[in-house]
Length: 121
Image (cartoon, rainbow, N blue to C red; front, top):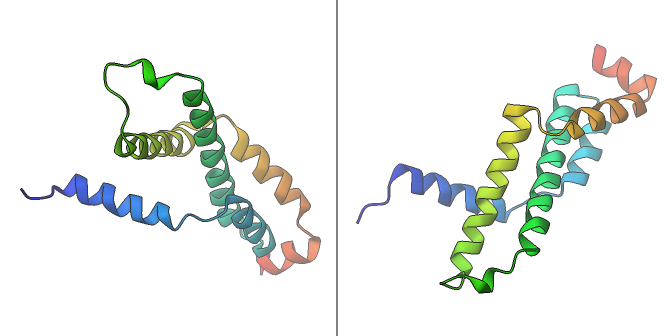
């Protein structure tokens, strides 16, 4: 049986998530770089991670042992991937919950005048 293009993309996505970066480190690095686009991308990544954690906490409150079939480890991994993509689509496509914009504005205000001058040149 051949693996479809969509399956290949999901496998690639899972591999890239295995090398997951810390959103806080990305925010700090983006702030220090002075690049607004990088700072907004890092803020969106942080909001995506935050929303994904909300989904994970929500699912933890539901007893999954009461179903007809017990959940397999594969299903749990797939559910995490779906939650991440849902969170990412909500942030990038739908504006999210506004956390990324607030983080961006706060961190942009914390940049030193020297950093702002260097990035303007």
